Image (cartoon, rainbow, N blue to C red; front, side, top):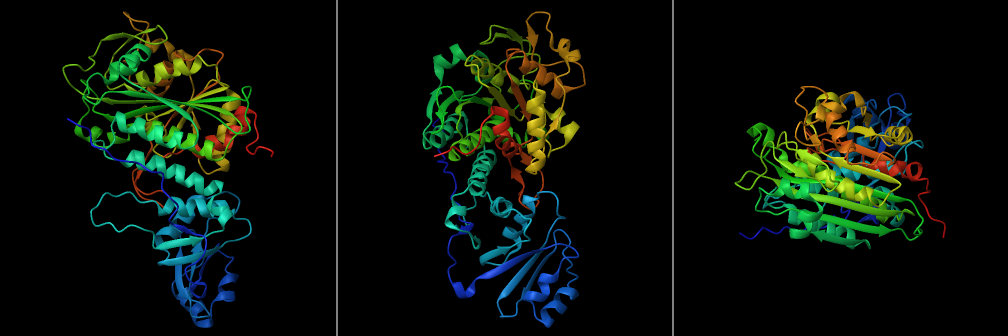
Length: 482
Protein backbone atom coordinates (compact mmCIF):
# COMPACT_ATOMS: atom_id res chain seq x y z
CA UNK A 1 0.00 0.00 0.00
CA UNK A 2 1.38 3.40 -0.96
CA UNK A 3 2.15 5.72 1.94
CA UNK A 4 0.18 8.95 2.18
CA UNK A 5 2.18 12.04 1.36
CA UNK A 6 2.11 15.19 3.44
CA UNK A 7 4.42 17.93 2.23
CA UNK A 8 5.81 19.89 5.15
CA UNK A 9 6.92 23.50 4.81
CA UNK A 10 8.54 25.70 7.43
CA UNK A 11 5.82 28.21 8.24
CA UNK A 12 6.08 31.87 7.30
CA UNK A 13 5.55 34.33 10.15
CA UNK A 14 2.05 35.41 9.12
CA UNK A 15 1.34 36.65 12.64
CA UNK A 16 3.75 39.55 11.99
CA UNK A 17 3.47 42.49 9.63
CA UNK A 18 6.19 44.95 8.68
CA UNK A 19 3.76 47.76 7.77
CA UNK A 20 0.27 48.17 9.18
CA UNK A 21 -2.57 47.93 6.69
CA UNK A 22 -3.75 51.41 7.66
CA UNK A 23 -1.63 53.85 9.66
CA UNK A 24 -4.73 55.63 10.92
CA UNK A 25 -5.98 52.38 12.46
CA UNK A 26 -2.67 51.53 14.09
CA UNK A 27 -3.37 50.32 17.62
CA UNK A 28 -1.21 49.88 20.70
CA UNK A 29 -0.94 47.29 23.45
CA UNK A 30 0.89 48.31 26.60
CA UNK A 31 2.60 46.16 29.18
CA UNK A 32 1.81 47.09 32.77
CA UNK A 33 3.11 45.72 36.07
CA UNK A 34 1.25 45.80 39.35
CA UNK A 35 1.81 49.16 41.01
CA UNK A 36 3.24 50.69 37.81
CA UNK A 37 0.06 51.77 36.02
CA UNK A 38 0.94 55.38 35.21
CA UNK A 39 0.66 54.55 31.52
CA UNK A 40 -3.11 54.19 31.95
CA UNK A 41 -3.50 57.90 32.74
CA UNK A 42 -1.29 58.80 29.78
CA UNK A 43 -3.39 57.06 27.13
CA UNK A 44 -6.87 56.83 28.67
CA UNK A 45 -9.52 59.41 29.35
CA UNK A 46 -11.11 59.68 32.78
CA UNK A 47 -13.88 57.43 31.55
CA UNK A 48 -11.32 54.88 30.33
CA UNK A 49 -9.49 54.91 33.67
CA UNK A 50 -12.78 54.44 35.48
CA UNK A 51 -13.56 51.48 33.21
CA UNK A 52 -10.14 49.95 33.97
CA UNK A 53 -10.77 50.29 37.70
CA UNK A 54 -14.25 48.83 37.31
CA UNK A 55 -12.65 45.81 35.58
CA UNK A 56 -10.27 45.52 38.54
CA UNK A 57 -7.29 45.87 36.20
CA UNK A 58 -4.15 46.48 38.24
CA UNK A 59 -1.39 44.97 36.09
CA UNK A 60 -1.33 41.60 37.80
CA UNK A 61 0.35 38.91 35.63
CA UNK A 62 -2.06 37.57 33.04
CA UNK A 63 -4.65 40.34 33.35
CA UNK A 64 -5.88 41.76 30.05
CA UNK A 65 -7.87 44.90 29.32
CA UNK A 66 -9.42 46.14 26.07
CA UNK A 67 -10.65 49.72 26.27
CA UNK A 68 -11.16 52.81 24.11
CA UNK A 69 -8.26 55.27 24.10
CA UNK A 70 -8.37 59.08 24.13
CA UNK A 71 -8.42 59.21 20.33
CA UNK A 72 -11.30 56.76 20.10
CA UNK A 73 -9.10 53.93 18.82
CA UNK A 74 -9.07 50.70 20.87
CA UNK A 75 -6.09 50.26 23.20
CA UNK A 76 -5.12 47.17 25.19
CA UNK A 77 -3.14 46.46 28.34
CA UNK A 78 -1.52 43.25 29.54
CA UNK A 79 -0.40 42.57 33.10
CA UNK A 80 3.25 41.52 33.20
CA UNK A 81 5.32 39.27 35.41
CA UNK A 82 7.57 41.06 37.93
CA UNK A 83 10.88 42.45 36.66
CA UNK A 84 14.11 40.53 37.11
CA UNK A 85 13.56 37.40 35.01
CA UNK A 86 12.71 36.72 31.40
CA UNK A 87 9.16 35.59 30.70
CA UNK A 88 8.74 35.36 26.91
CA UNK A 89 5.76 33.02 27.11
CA UNK A 90 3.60 35.69 28.76
CA UNK A 91 3.43 37.52 25.44
CA UNK A 92 1.79 34.49 23.88
CA UNK A 93 -1.38 35.78 25.54
CA UNK A 94 -1.40 38.72 23.12
CA UNK A 95 -1.82 36.44 20.11
CA UNK A 96 -4.84 34.91 21.82
CA UNK A 97 -6.54 37.93 23.43
CA UNK A 98 -5.83 40.92 21.18
CA UNK A 99 -8.73 41.82 18.87
CA UNK A 100 -8.22 41.40 15.12
CA UNK A 101 -5.95 43.96 13.51
CA UNK A 102 -2.34 45.16 13.49
CA UNK A 103 -0.84 46.11 16.84
CA UNK A 104 2.21 47.93 18.15
CA UNK A 105 3.59 46.56 21.41
CA UNK A 106 4.78 49.13 23.94
CA UNK A 107 6.57 47.50 26.87
CA UNK A 108 8.67 48.70 29.83
CA UNK A 109 12.29 49.48 28.98
CA UNK A 110 13.62 46.38 30.76
CA UNK A 111 11.61 44.04 28.52
CA UNK A 112 13.67 42.59 25.68
CA UNK A 113 11.98 43.14 22.35
CA UNK A 114 12.98 39.64 21.21
CA UNK A 115 11.00 38.18 24.11
CA UNK A 116 7.88 39.99 22.94
CA UNK A 117 8.31 38.75 19.37
CA UNK A 118 9.16 35.19 20.38
CA UNK A 119 6.32 34.89 22.87
CA UNK A 120 3.78 36.39 20.49
CA UNK A 121 4.79 34.04 17.67
CA UNK A 122 4.73 30.97 19.91
CA UNK A 123 1.29 31.97 21.14
CA UNK A 124 0.05 32.45 17.57
CA UNK A 125 0.83 28.83 16.65
CA UNK A 126 -2.10 26.59 15.80
CA UNK A 127 -2.22 23.07 14.35
CA UNK A 128 -5.41 21.79 12.75
CA UNK A 129 -6.41 19.69 9.77
CA UNK A 130 -10.05 20.81 9.73
CA UNK A 131 -11.70 21.22 6.34
CA UNK A 132 -13.33 24.53 7.32
CA UNK A 133 -10.29 26.20 8.86
CA UNK A 134 -9.69 29.61 7.29
CA UNK A 135 -6.06 30.40 6.38
CA UNK A 136 -4.29 33.54 7.47
CA UNK A 137 -3.69 35.38 10.73
CA UNK A 138 -6.22 38.01 11.87
CA UNK A 139 -4.23 39.46 14.76
CA UNK A 140 -0.75 40.64 13.82
CA UNK A 141 2.14 42.37 15.57
CA UNK A 142 3.88 45.20 13.77
CA UNK A 143 7.65 44.69 13.42
CA UNK A 144 10.59 46.16 11.52
CA UNK A 145 12.14 44.50 8.48
CA UNK A 146 15.17 43.57 10.58
CA UNK A 147 13.02 42.04 13.30
CA UNK A 148 11.04 40.05 10.75
CA UNK A 149 14.26 38.30 9.71
CA UNK A 150 15.89 38.26 13.14
CA UNK A 151 16.81 35.53 15.60
CA UNK A 152 13.59 35.68 17.63
CA UNK A 153 11.41 35.07 14.59
CA UNK A 154 13.67 32.31 13.25
CA UNK A 155 13.60 30.72 16.69
CA UNK A 156 9.81 30.73 16.60
CA UNK A 157 9.74 29.30 13.08
CA UNK A 158 12.09 26.52 14.17
CA UNK A 159 9.86 25.72 17.15
CA UNK A 160 6.85 25.75 14.82
CA UNK A 161 8.63 23.19 12.64
CA UNK A 162 9.11 20.86 15.59
CA UNK A 163 5.53 21.38 16.77
CA UNK A 164 4.16 20.64 13.29
CA UNK A 165 6.11 17.40 13.06
CA UNK A 166 5.15 16.21 16.53
CA UNK A 167 1.49 17.11 16.05
CA UNK A 168 1.20 15.45 12.65
CA UNK A 169 -0.84 12.23 12.80
CA UNK A 170 1.20 9.06 12.42
CA UNK A 171 -0.65 8.05 9.25
CA UNK A 172 0.75 11.19 7.62
CA UNK A 173 4.23 11.03 9.14
CA UNK A 174 6.04 7.72 8.96
CA UNK A 175 9.80 7.08 8.83
CA UNK A 176 9.95 7.96 5.14
CA UNK A 177 8.14 11.27 5.61
CA UNK A 178 10.20 12.26 8.65
CA UNK A 179 13.44 11.59 6.81
CA UNK A 180 12.10 13.54 3.81
CA UNK A 181 11.19 16.49 6.05
CA UNK A 182 14.75 16.52 7.40
CA UNK A 183 16.10 16.34 3.86
CA UNK A 184 13.92 19.22 2.66
CA UNK A 185 14.62 21.52 5.61
CA UNK A 186 18.36 20.95 5.84
CA UNK A 187 19.18 20.93 2.13
CA UNK A 188 17.28 24.22 1.73
CA UNK A 189 19.84 25.74 4.12
CA UNK A 190 22.88 24.31 2.37
CA UNK A 191 23.46 21.01 4.17
CA UNK A 192 24.47 17.78 2.47
CA UNK A 193 21.94 15.13 3.45
CA UNK A 194 21.92 11.37 2.91
CA UNK A 195 18.85 9.24 3.60
CA UNK A 196 19.90 5.65 4.27
CA UNK A 197 17.57 2.66 3.97
CA UNK A 198 17.40 -1.02 2.99
CA UNK A 199 20.52 -3.19 3.01
CA UNK A 200 22.81 -0.27 3.81
CA UNK A 201 20.76 0.57 6.88
CA UNK A 202 20.67 -3.03 8.09
CA UNK A 203 24.45 -3.23 7.70
CA UNK A 204 25.39 0.05 9.38
CA UNK A 205 22.57 0.46 11.92
CA UNK A 206 21.57 -3.06 13.02
CA UNK A 207 19.71 -1.94 16.14
CA UNK A 208 17.69 0.63 14.20
CA UNK A 209 16.86 -2.04 11.65
CA UNK A 210 15.80 -4.49 14.35
CA UNK A 211 13.42 -1.96 15.91
CA UNK A 212 11.85 -1.21 12.54
CA UNK A 213 11.58 -4.81 11.39
CA UNK A 214 7.97 -5.18 12.48
CA UNK A 215 6.55 -2.33 10.42
CA UNK A 216 5.62 -2.20 6.75
CA UNK A 217 6.91 1.38 6.84
CA UNK A 218 10.60 0.68 6.63
CA UNK A 219 13.13 2.60 8.74
CA UNK A 220 15.32 5.42 7.50
CA UNK A 221 18.39 7.16 8.89
CA UNK A 222 18.96 10.76 7.83
CA UNK A 223 22.55 12.02 8.08
CA UNK A 224 23.33 15.69 7.40
CA UNK A 225 26.55 17.72 7.33
CA UNK A 226 26.84 21.51 7.26
CA UNK A 227 29.49 24.15 7.82
CA UNK A 228 28.86 27.79 8.72
CA UNK A 229 30.13 30.50 6.39
CA UNK A 230 32.59 31.61 9.05
CA UNK A 231 33.78 28.09 9.85
CA UNK A 232 36.78 26.12 8.63
CA UNK A 233 37.77 22.47 8.74
CA UNK A 234 39.27 23.18 12.17
CA UNK A 235 36.13 24.78 13.61
CA UNK A 236 34.28 23.02 16.44
CA UNK A 237 32.13 20.07 15.41
CA UNK A 238 28.69 19.72 17.00
CA UNK A 239 26.98 16.38 16.44
CA UNK A 240 23.23 16.10 17.06
CA UNK A 241 21.32 12.81 17.32
CA UNK A 242 17.53 12.48 17.53
CA UNK A 243 15.13 9.64 18.28
CA UNK A 244 12.51 9.56 15.54
CA UNK A 245 10.05 6.80 16.47
CA UNK A 246 7.07 7.95 14.41
CA UNK A 247 4.70 5.69 16.31
CA UNK A 248 5.41 3.43 19.25
CA UNK A 249 2.99 0.59 19.88
CA UNK A 250 5.41 -0.95 22.37
CA UNK A 251 5.94 -3.94 20.08
CA UNK A 252 5.20 -7.35 21.58
CA UNK A 253 5.39 -5.69 25.00
CA UNK A 254 2.30 -3.84 23.84
CA UNK A 255 1.32 -0.58 25.50
CA UNK A 256 -2.21 -0.22 26.91
CA UNK A 257 -4.46 2.03 24.85
CA UNK A 258 -4.02 4.92 27.28
CA UNK A 259 -0.23 4.67 26.96
CA UNK A 260 -0.40 4.49 23.19
CA UNK A 261 -2.69 7.49 22.72
CA UNK A 262 0.04 10.12 22.28
CA UNK A 263 2.72 7.94 20.75
CA UNK A 264 2.73 9.93 17.54
CA UNK A 265 4.94 12.26 19.63
CA UNK A 266 7.63 9.63 20.12
CA UNK A 267 9.64 11.27 17.36
CA UNK A 268 9.81 14.46 19.44
CA UNK A 269 13.56 14.11 19.94
CA UNK A 270 14.19 14.03 16.19
CA UNK A 271 11.82 16.98 15.66
CA UNK A 272 13.62 18.99 18.35
CA UNK A 273 17.04 18.16 16.92
CA UNK A 274 15.86 19.21 13.47
CA UNK A 275 14.49 22.49 14.87
CA UNK A 276 17.77 23.13 16.72
CA UNK A 277 19.79 22.39 13.59
CA UNK A 278 17.63 24.76 11.56
CA UNK A 279 18.11 27.54 14.12
CA UNK A 280 21.88 27.04 14.14
CA UNK A 281 21.97 27.17 10.36
CA UNK A 282 19.75 30.24 9.95
CA UNK A 283 21.93 32.08 12.46
CA UNK A 284 25.05 30.87 10.64
CA UNK A 285 27.04 29.84 13.71
CA UNK A 286 30.74 29.45 12.86
CA UNK A 287 30.79 25.70 13.47
CA UNK A 288 30.66 22.38 11.70
CA UNK A 289 27.42 20.52 12.25
CA UNK A 290 26.37 16.90 11.85
CA UNK A 291 22.80 15.68 12.34
CA UNK A 292 21.60 12.07 12.61
CA UNK A 293 17.96 11.10 12.89
CA UNK A 294 16.78 7.55 13.41
CA UNK A 295 13.36 7.39 11.71
CA UNK A 296 11.48 4.21 12.54
CA UNK A 297 8.15 2.75 13.65
CA UNK A 298 7.80 0.23 16.48
CA UNK A 299 5.01 -2.13 15.41
CA UNK A 300 3.74 -5.66 15.99
CA UNK A 301 3.93 -8.30 13.25
CA UNK A 302 5.41 -11.68 12.51
CA UNK A 303 8.69 -9.93 11.72
CA UNK A 304 8.80 -7.72 14.80
CA UNK A 305 11.55 -7.97 17.40
CA UNK A 306 10.79 -10.27 20.30
CA UNK A 307 11.61 -10.16 23.99
CA UNK A 308 15.02 -11.76 24.67
CA UNK A 309 16.25 -11.35 21.09
CA UNK A 310 19.99 -10.62 21.02
CA UNK A 311 21.34 -8.19 18.42
CA UNK A 312 24.88 -7.12 17.66
CA UNK A 313 25.13 -3.32 17.56
CA UNK A 314 27.27 -1.11 15.31
CA UNK A 315 29.68 -0.75 18.23
CA UNK A 316 30.11 -4.55 18.38
CA UNK A 317 28.33 -4.90 21.71
CA UNK A 318 25.55 -7.46 21.85
CA UNK A 319 22.24 -6.25 23.26
CA UNK A 320 19.50 -8.40 24.75
CA UNK A 321 15.99 -7.07 24.16
CA UNK A 322 14.62 -7.22 27.69
CA UNK A 323 11.56 -5.24 26.63
CA UNK A 324 10.44 -4.29 23.13
CA UNK A 325 8.94 -1.05 24.47
CA UNK A 326 12.42 0.23 25.35
CA UNK A 327 13.16 0.74 21.67
CA UNK A 328 14.25 4.40 21.66
CA UNK A 329 17.60 3.71 23.28
CA UNK A 330 18.26 1.05 20.63
CA UNK A 331 17.63 3.58 17.87
CA UNK A 332 20.00 6.07 19.48
CA UNK A 333 22.78 3.59 20.25
CA UNK A 334 23.92 2.98 16.68
CA UNK A 335 23.66 6.68 15.82
CA UNK A 336 25.71 7.69 18.87
CA UNK A 337 28.33 5.15 17.88
CA UNK A 338 28.61 6.51 14.35
CA UNK A 339 28.61 10.13 15.54
CA UNK A 340 31.42 9.37 17.97
CA UNK A 341 33.56 7.95 15.16
CA UNK A 342 33.93 11.54 13.89
CA UNK A 343 35.17 12.78 17.29
CA UNK A 344 32.87 15.80 17.69
CA UNK A 345 33.65 18.54 20.17
CA UNK A 346 30.17 17.94 21.58
CA UNK A 347 27.80 15.03 21.03
CA UNK A 348 24.22 15.82 22.02
CA UNK A 349 21.13 13.67 21.68
CA UNK A 350 17.46 14.37 22.37
CA UNK A 351 14.74 11.79 22.87
CA UNK A 352 11.31 11.19 24.34
CA UNK A 353 12.97 8.33 26.13
CA UNK A 354 11.42 7.46 29.50
CA UNK A 355 8.25 7.88 31.49
CA UNK A 356 10.50 7.77 34.55
CA UNK A 357 11.90 11.21 33.68
CA UNK A 358 8.34 12.58 33.62
CA UNK A 359 7.56 10.98 36.98
CA UNK A 360 10.66 12.63 38.44
CA UNK A 361 10.41 16.05 36.80
CA UNK A 362 6.98 16.42 35.24
CA UNK A 363 6.25 17.51 31.67
CA UNK A 364 7.93 20.93 31.65
CA UNK A 365 11.46 20.02 32.76
CA UNK A 366 13.58 17.96 30.34
CA UNK A 367 16.04 15.73 32.16
CA UNK A 368 19.67 16.54 31.49
CA UNK A 369 22.39 13.90 31.68
CA UNK A 370 26.00 14.64 30.82
CA UNK A 371 29.52 13.45 31.54
CA UNK A 372 30.73 17.07 31.58
CA UNK A 373 30.16 19.36 34.56
CA UNK A 374 31.10 22.35 32.39
CA UNK A 375 28.46 21.43 29.82
CA UNK A 376 25.88 20.95 32.57
CA UNK A 377 26.63 24.35 34.07
CA UNK A 378 26.44 26.07 30.67
CA UNK A 379 23.11 24.44 29.80
CA UNK A 380 21.51 25.01 33.20
CA UNK A 381 22.54 28.67 33.22
CA UNK A 382 21.33 29.18 29.66
CA UNK A 383 18.06 27.48 30.54
CA UNK A 384 17.46 29.93 33.36
CA UNK A 385 18.42 32.94 31.25
CA UNK A 386 16.18 31.89 28.36
CA UNK A 387 13.21 30.73 30.48
CA UNK A 388 13.81 27.31 28.92
CA UNK A 389 14.89 25.27 31.95
CA UNK A 390 16.41 21.81 32.24
CA UNK A 391 17.17 19.78 35.35
CA UNK A 392 20.27 17.64 35.75
CA UNK A 393 19.97 14.01 36.81
CA UNK A 394 23.00 11.84 37.59
CA UNK A 395 24.77 9.23 35.49
CA UNK A 396 24.95 7.22 38.69
CA UNK A 397 27.49 4.47 38.07
CA UNK A 398 26.25 2.51 41.05
CA UNK A 399 23.33 1.42 38.85
CA UNK A 400 25.47 0.46 35.84
CA UNK A 401 25.29 -3.23 36.74
CA UNK A 402 21.51 -3.13 36.58
CA UNK A 403 21.59 -3.35 32.77
CA UNK A 404 23.90 -6.39 32.67
CA UNK A 405 22.68 -9.47 30.81
CA UNK A 406 23.63 -13.11 31.39
CA UNK A 407 23.68 -13.85 27.65
CA UNK A 408 24.71 -10.53 26.04
CA UNK A 409 26.98 -7.60 26.78
CA UNK A 410 24.02 -5.64 28.15
CA UNK A 411 20.23 -5.53 28.27
CA UNK A 412 18.11 -2.64 27.05
CA UNK A 413 16.26 -2.53 30.39
CA UNK A 414 16.69 -3.15 34.08
CA UNK A 415 14.27 -5.39 35.91
CA UNK A 416 14.52 -3.21 39.02
CA UNK A 417 11.56 -0.83 39.50
CA UNK A 418 13.72 2.21 40.14
CA UNK A 419 15.72 4.94 38.34
CA UNK A 420 14.38 4.20 34.85
CA UNK A 421 15.63 7.49 33.38
CA UNK A 422 19.08 6.97 34.90
CA UNK A 423 19.47 3.39 33.65
CA UNK A 424 18.32 4.43 30.17
CA UNK A 425 21.02 7.12 30.16
CA UNK A 426 23.59 4.58 31.40
CA UNK A 427 22.62 2.32 28.49
CA UNK A 428 23.30 5.14 26.02
CA UNK A 429 26.58 5.94 27.76
CA UNK A 430 27.86 2.48 26.83
CA UNK A 431 27.84 3.63 23.19
CA UNK A 432 29.79 6.84 23.88
CA UNK A 433 33.58 6.76 24.17
CA UNK A 434 34.83 7.75 27.66
CA UNK A 435 36.70 10.84 26.40
CA UNK A 436 33.74 12.16 24.39
CA UNK A 437 31.88 15.20 25.78
CA UNK A 438 28.27 14.04 25.67
CA UNK A 439 24.84 15.43 26.59
CA UNK A 440 21.61 13.43 26.72
CA UNK A 441 18.27 15.25 27.02
CA UNK A 442 15.19 13.20 27.92
CA UNK A 443 12.20 15.34 26.92
CA UNK A 444 8.42 14.99 27.03
CA UNK A 445 7.95 17.11 23.85
CA UNK A 446 4.29 17.76 24.62
CA UNK A 447 2.02 20.24 26.40
CA UNK A 448 -0.84 18.45 28.13
CA UNK A 449 -2.85 21.67 28.40
CA UNK A 450 -2.83 25.08 26.74
CA UNK A 451 -0.99 27.99 28.36
CA UNK A 452 0.12 31.36 26.94
CA UNK A 453 2.77 30.69 24.30
CA UNK A 454 2.38 26.94 24.72
CA UNK A 455 -0.72 25.54 22.98
CA UNK A 456 -1.76 22.00 23.80
CA UNK A 457 0.20 19.49 21.73
CA UNK A 458 3.74 19.02 20.52
CA UNK A 459 6.59 21.23 21.70
CA UNK A 460 10.38 21.35 21.79
CA UNK A 461 11.67 22.51 25.18
CA UNK A 462 15.44 22.84 25.65
CA UNK A 463 16.36 23.87 22.09
CA UNK A 464 16.55 27.56 23.02
CA UNK A 465 18.74 26.72 25.99
CA UNK A 466 21.08 24.57 23.90
CA UNK A 467 21.35 27.24 21.21
CA UNK A 468 22.09 29.94 23.78
CA UNK A 469 24.80 27.76 25.36
CA UNK A 470 26.54 26.94 22.06
CA UNK A 471 29.17 29.64 22.50
CA UNK A 472 30.26 28.18 25.84
CA UNK A 473 29.81 24.53 24.87
CA UNK A 474 31.85 24.94 21.68
CA UNK A 475 34.02 27.93 22.62
CA UNK A 476 32.66 30.10 19.83
CA UNK A 477 31.01 33.47 19.36
CA UNK A 478 27.55 33.46 17.80
CA UNK A 479 28.23 36.21 15.29
CA UNK A 480 31.00 35.94 12.74
CA UNK A 481 33.00 39.07 11.99
CA UNK A 482 32.61 40.23 8.42
